[in-house]
Length: 123
Image (cartoon, rainbow, N blue to C red):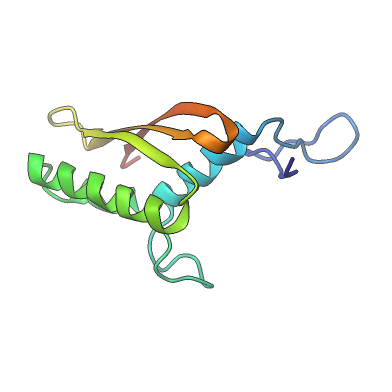
């Protein structure tokens, strides 16, 4: 198993950062990181990331929600190609400046099926 620090960072009982316990935790972290990173933030790959917070300042329409879903799908295919996306749902409650993203995915090689639920707002 890959040992990575668990976020948010916390000091564990042996004066070390707590580590992730499962592969599922690592995959969920990578997926969330991909969604919240804006293109240009990662110096080694300026195209990395979806930057969903950037979409909060656009007029939210059915078309813009579909564009967000397409951007997410393309980014996952490019950077997390071990994930098979089953469904991407992007919604926004009226007058909320909030985007709710649900991604149902699986990793057949590891027998993992999971759904990431992420609510992004401009706060």
